[in-house]
Length: 260
Ligand SMILES: O=C[C@H](O)COP(=O)(O)O
Image 1 (cartoon, protein in one colour):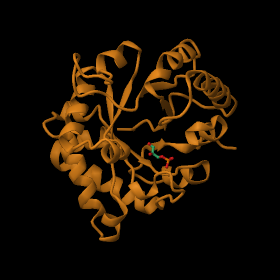
Image 2: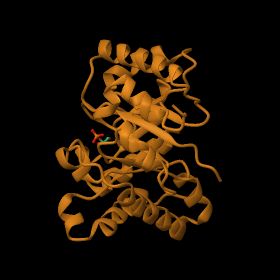
Image 3: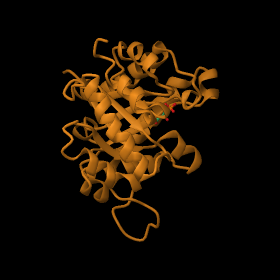
Image 4: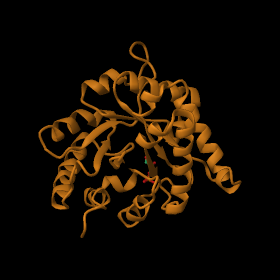
């Protein structure tokens, strides 16, 4: 099984819909100039909810093959949940992905393992691929417990899913200490944990599932670090924050495989 690499840009709480349109138009152009082949490396963006309609309009008919998704999804299907956005709403816009359990959601919005698991299920129920984010804070890494901590999050996020459902999930390993800090985990650090995640998937869901699931690395990824990361056997792409806000830099990351 050959996994198609995925380079996903998480815009976080940045860009008005007008800025989003300009960035995306630049990105489409930069990817074209850099020789991006959508069937070799998949590119996706995760805009703020209010930008998604604009993103859909720019991408529709652009021929870029860029996918998009939500940075979050409600665990509920519909109803009196003020401020929430449902899987049905995202799907209706043509979204492919929904990020779930990002460390910023866990940290600033108190999202528990149970909520994360319910959101993974809500995404799958709406034919969206969840990007399940996991990763340890600095204390856990210092204590040498980073693998244990991260695998517990993977198990929690996938609780109650069938093997067929797990195949549709993308897992993003994002050590919290490397997010937005400029501190990139070494490619060996990324490989160690991504490999353990794949091992866990094999044990729990079988080799076919472990072979199919894409495991990304996230945390201060830049064009200068992507090539080494992508050379690791179990790293299938990147979840990019800050660097996805610059069209030329993000296009460079997404075309790491194109000879200069
Ligand atoms: O979702 C993306 C990650 O939080 C990484 O963000 P960063 O590339 O700004 O460190």
